[in-house]
Length: 349
Length: 83
Image: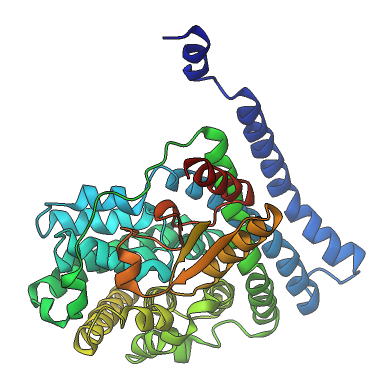
């Protein structure tokens, strides 16, 4: 082999990129540590609101939570996107091929978290899975986990409720996806998939890419800009409303309607959540404030899952490949699973 | 002449890919036919599992993301050289 060609193929250590990443981490940590004193200074000194007053506390809450959530979203989405450059729908399909019910459902739900997914891709992904012989139930475990355990929802739960609630949310999302997938698989719903799906012939592999660190970082940064650009306004409005509730609504005012005494609060939360998909980023800060005023954790988690997991737009898209009976079962099984989760958390907490 | 296909059901990301492709085709002053493929059976022929997909002269070059303008330029240049 030619000398110049062999040196060209030697992997170089991308020092410049690593240096930039380290600088980025330092800047992020510095910013994250400065926002609390800064928020207090703006609310109590610059705007001269007395500490402990309704308006002063609401303002301090707002000026702290907005930059905190935006920073968390930016940092975590970057890391998640970086991780996701190592996964692809094609790779996931290869991993799921030939897996039995059970093992397959568990793996599908977990891969649903890390595989890049957008609800506009739900149909090609569904077709790709089903035509390569992955069982319908396993495919559904993936299709339920991917939007439900959504990075924006998890990050905002972490930022506003702490790691325990975020962890509980991920765990219940996984259990719901696994069980709902197994139920749908057992119901033998194959004939309720639109016929054209079964007639398609799969071909050889799509694009496979070998990326350099620089390309991975560039793509991750692009998705940070895209996602934060899309949700920041919802975050600001949501936190503003949340801050208002925080400062003005008396404590425990909501225990009566959103607390655990009322049996209907969980199903009601799920029903209200279904059409609210696009506002997930704005809903969480409001919900966080509601919980502070007496809404119970189970009701809040059920609401969140319903908002992100049972989305109307995704259901409409899936109608292209699923007959109405299967759509109804899909929504029904997830709704029931979320309601059970809600009751469970209201009962144990 | 190049045949460029944008695969996707018409979501925001697919439109973005189409815009980028049109811009680059104009900049390079290429003769190209740009087709939007929105029907799933047709999209699945290219074995794409995540949209938007980009096909140049029947070859899938990108799927599941919005390629950068620089990447699109490379895809088109490569296709021209292969012609």
